[in-house]
Length: 288
Picture (tube, rainbow, N blue to C red):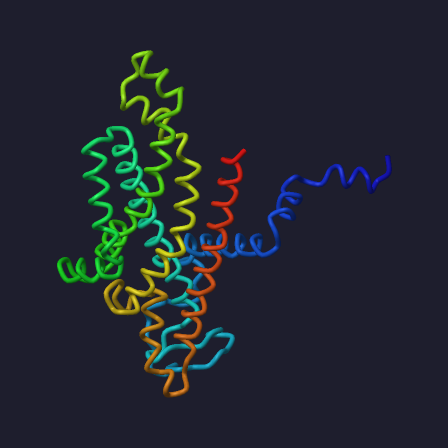
């Protein structure tokens, strides 16, 4: 066997899988991974203190000291983008986590108990569908004040109906399978069947739905911060940076809004494409 054939046989499966996924999705996956790494190590790799002002360096252009320039108070834009990555990703992650846990609980409870419980939970889900996430966030901020927690909790509640509606149909279908009846005949309790069998079998769909929801949650939280209802200055956040830099655009200094807005768009598109790809993979596996 030639050296070329040995090399071909020895090529890692990861490379072959990456080639089958497609270069666009691989690139988006790399972007998502890079953002996650920056979110974890951001405060340690930021070249400057993201909240330190310097009146001498106001609206400074790109330089070795400030690679992306400074804002209207002399704060380093690159440092604010890097440190702001943690909040910009942590918020959507919490929204997806909370909404998924609540959505799974509602869906499995409705599917397992059925009857009036299913009807009542379905009506509650329909009512929540009538309220957009941003409206719920505004109400939550009006009641509990601005910050990180209120918008996250409000959006988590707003995302529950999406998760619950998708999983309820799958849970009803799973509940009617023969193995569930066999477990009940063997004396297994409802809690045991749900936690040990029903919910684990729904996990591929749960993961796919969570992956798709992450990008939308990121966009919603960025919009809330832009409106001044979320993270408050001087804390670094991408949505806050877009809003803070907007007045400076008229004066010819679009750096802050431009870079922050571009980062939001890139992150949302990357996570959405990766999420859709994950969902397609799970749907294909389920069809088999």
